[in-house]
Length: 266
Image 1 (cartoon, rainbow, N blue to C red):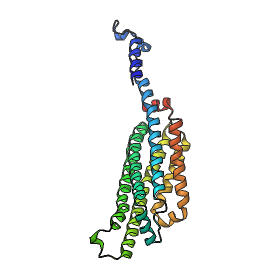
Image 2: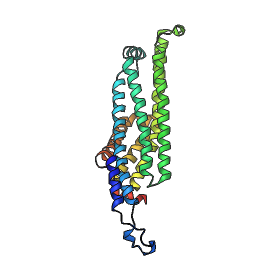
Image 3: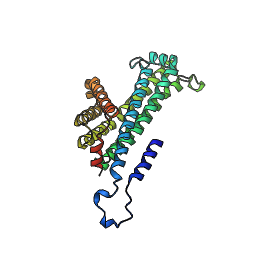
Image 4: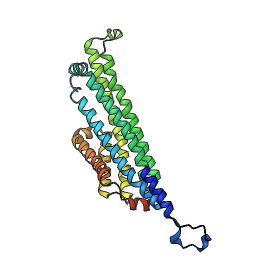
């Protein structure tokens, strides 16, 4: 920041004095142009910051999934209850990392609004609405996943239920959480479609990234049909990861074409 301040001071010193003559007598080339350099400074850091937040989201989300992997056995309530009791700290850590990942995605959404506002401010805000809704739904899904730890906590008021009933209830709540999480993915499908459209209409990011995001969006929309998800499930996740990871890596390594972003902003 200090270096930028010194450069700004030097740039002001280098500006020729223009007050000695009437403005009407000045050539256009003599007038100081502040807009273009300012936009050039703003654009690149936004892209890099977006890429870093994207990377943090990926890391926390993947770690959260690893912490919870294998704990829930979809066809065995007793085994699930045993795993939850045995690995409760690990399971809670996974949920906490999932919430942190959602927080990073909220920040990412805000950064994308600014990045794509020059392309189409209306679609940019609409995309943010879909993302915020998806994040809210998936945050609520965490409540269902936290409930089994309370049920298995051994509180006295739960003794009216048998062990088998408590185990079945835990698995039922976990499935509710999974279903709520999938509903959130539908909103992210619309988000990816909107983001893909903005990338395709932009001049500062490659169209290939936009195509991948559009395909990923259609993939997440498959969760509207449970039967379709069952048959396409592995491919949907792979496509979604490839699309978003490609966008993340491009922002981290290449950034955006600052000159084209600047022209589209004016």
